[in-house]
Amino acid sequence: MAGVEAGKELKWMRSLLGEFGYTFDTASTLCIDSMSAINVSKNPEHHGRMKHLDLKFHWLRENVEAGIIKPKHVGTNDMIADCLTKPLIRLKHDKCRIGLGLVD
Image (cartoon, rainbow, N blue to C red; front, side, top):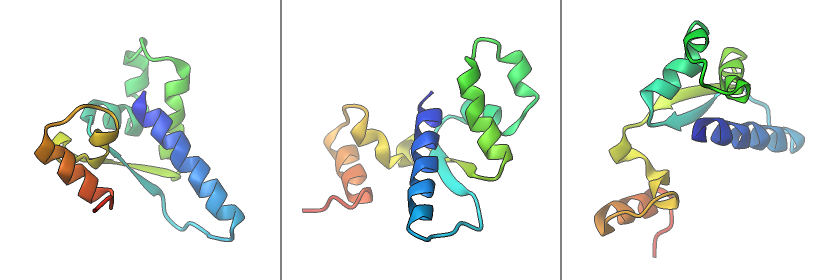
C-alpha cells in the first residue's frame, strides 16, 4: 500500500515537473524494501493469485508496465525514509537524516 501511495506522489511530481518544461526519457525509480510488492508490481500473472489485494493496488503494476515507474529493491537497513515512518534508534535515525540531506 505504501508503494502505491509513493508511486502516486512520484507520478504527480513528474506531472508537475512536466508543467515546468522538464521531459522524462526513462522511468522514475521507486525504492521499495518489500520484494513481494516489487514482484506483484512487475509480474502481471501475480495478480490472479493475490485476490486479497484491492483493485487500486494494480495501479502500480499498470504504471510499471507503462514505463513510468521502475521499482527498485532497497534493503530495510538502507531505506532512508524510515525516519519519517517509524521510531528508530539514534544511529539509524542519524543515518536516515543525513541521507535525506537534513544535516546540522
